Image (tube, rainbow, N blue to C red; front, side, top):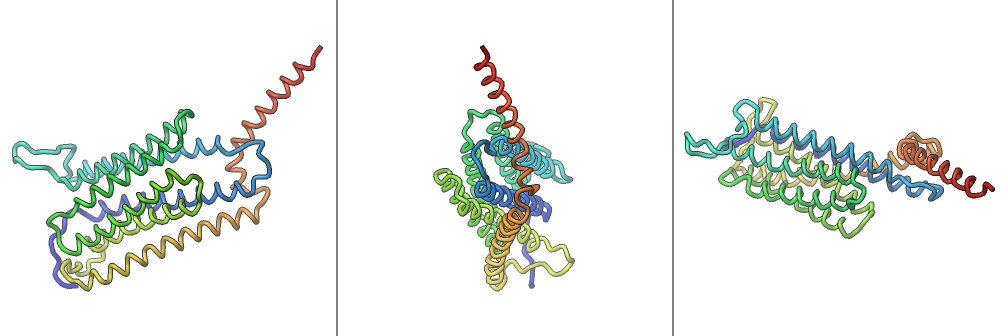
Length: 292
């Protein structure tokens, strides 16, 4: 592949956020399709899935906060990391600012997790706060990676520009969701873009930090840019296929297992308990009212 230029960072710094984004993309796709499928299957309006929705939002928030903390601690306290030191006054220089870029990205996704937890525990808070915080996290992620590659080699800059592009597209879709509520098409578009983000993080890692012991990529070869342009499109095609496969599996499984599907039991167990308690209270009140 030719001569390699100088690159900064490491493979793990790209693999971990890629892994987290892929997991989030798969989870959000599954949750979106489940909500859509159960709205179609729900036979009555005596109870809804709000109780379980709040539970899953809280669990999701805890996972996002935990993953963000792991990313922050791993980036700061690995051997050679900045160890929460931003400026070295003895050497009169900044300390590993690229790691601090990652710290900033994880910080805002951690705030997203905190917002999910608050919105699921404080019922007076609108659910749109979580979407607004997601939009903020994507804006910060895009801003950080736009300024992440100054002075780097051509191919290094190019792969990060593609990452910046997909982050901006994801942010645009998330912004649209603030005004278009409960639209499965828009939600699936967002989740597929999250899958693309995650897989492209891994692609950047393999391009800049080869693990197979082979020759490194030539960071000044235009043919590599031509190939990675196609590769980016293939990544998106894969994300679309994964999204479609999840949609098909969840909807078909729900159809074949109705009405005793474990998916339905999962989504309605908490609501059935709430509805049963509510019914018993109403019955007791009615009996009391009719007593002489």
